[in-house]
Image 1 (tube, rainbow, N blue to C red):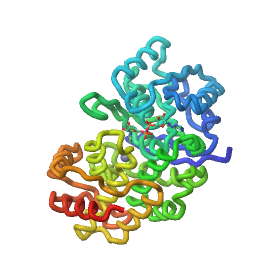
Image 2 (cartoon, rainbow, N blue to C red):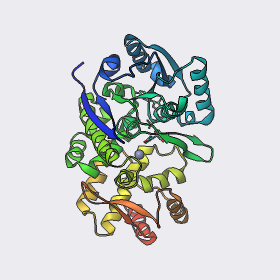
Image 3 (cartoon, protein in one colour):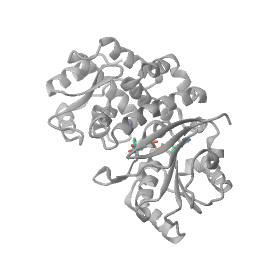
Length: 366
Ligand SMILES: NC(=O)c1ccc[n+]([C@@H]2O[C@H](COP(=O)([O-])OP(=O)(O)OC[C@H]3O[C@@H](n4cnc5c(N)ncnc54)[C@H](O)[C@@H]3O)[C@@H](O)[C@H]2O)c1
Ligand SMILES: [Zn+2]
């Protein structure tokens, strides 16, 4: 493999590395720091990652590094982020046993990362964790920042903890086995990162949307590195989301509304964010903050990637009620808007403004 790229993330006085490189999974023991006294490693993963050979390759690499390794598969899908699945994993740790110097390795998308991350946060009051994200969304977002957790029947991510990994290892080559729709949804988060902080990243996506759709590993490597660096900068400055980290919610206020009102599953998360980005930029235009050209560019770029940009018909009362209930809503509805690329601002948005924008977007669905 060629030399991987590395980023450093410092949170609360501790630093860890984010490593991006093709072929990284086969060389994990040499490329990421493992805990000095670890003897055992529990790989938490899902069936597709085993079927495509990614989890077994990670397990082999850890064995080569001298660890006693077990691979534990949890069911596929969001349903794995559940108390009973977590309790099963605690049982595996207790029976083996996995000690306080040992290691948990998450091999999968954001679901596995959140679940295994919370396992690592809670087992023995916290053991070492390595994140091996295998979806584009997890590589640029979920695996970075230390948020872990599970869902309850009452709602998503209600139980969780902050637990920073020892390292994050992203191998763009594994994205070749990811269905195109999932690769493309991750690109919505990359565009979001670009809009927040990096005009060059936006231009890269504009220049080669087909490369993302095809899964061009070189292009993905560059995009992951840049988008991850942006999240690292924001999280490093603000781990607990008091200030700047809130900007990462660009596109997410309306995105969450869409996910909630259409039922989870209709829109993939990144698809809902794509529509949410369109709405946020149009709200900015309406309020005289966002240049019209930037809103148009964003919509064109999302469409070229194959992401949805049209707002489906939704009952307005339900939209407003859901917005107000969003946990990020403090003193009325506030949304992240853009004065320009690299200039996010958290601003109050009135119901009338939102209605005007939704009416306009419903009128010219394209
Ligand atoms: N902790 C955070 O900061 C954070 C941020 C964003 C999202 N999340 C969480 O992430 C989760 C969504 O993550 P996701 O979008 O990665 O979905 P996911 O983890 O469900 O993965 C999607 C599907 O792709 C499969 N898959 C994963 N990698 C593959 C590969 N390389 N080849 C083939 N198939 C593969 C998975 O098995 C799954 O079926 C949500 O639960 C969300 O709450 C967390
Ligand atoms: Zn998101």
